[in-house]
Image (cartoon, rainbow, N blue to C red; front, side):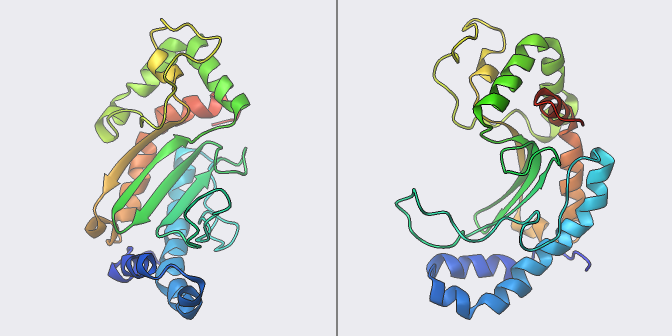
Length: 230
């Protein structure tokens, strides 16, 4: 399957879903969902797989529609006031083979009519992994500074995403440490954006792959910090 871009029918499906977020509508439109959403996502995953291997052999591009790199469209609404059953965006994650959940180091692509963004890092890791990253920043501060300030990071991403940092220094860490802004982070992620027009082109897979490659300094540090090979 050849990736030709995420076209207007892809984003149009999510616009309609946002206005009809109910099971009856989705079931009636499920064949269209598979054709205009799942198919191009699978094609993208297949296309980016070899490009990921050039960055690191440990990040997995799994084209299976269920259980692979494409996130489920069903929302987990158990702990949310919003009980709408479906996500109004598509998400692709290329996880490290070290971890099987969304909080392991990985690359991500987010596609919705309102925004398209992509990048890499670790999103809301569990306490042990977060502690390892913070400890690595303290123990290897010059290495971390070199990674986060690398030219490819600054040129493509600008800086690490803000996320939802702690107000104060985490317990056990020096509040006056030169990297305290980063030590207060609960996620370590870099992202950049694209337009819907850009996402609709076949060359979009090359742009995303190039951005993933540019994230390598930070990705390498984070991956090794949690005890995984890069």
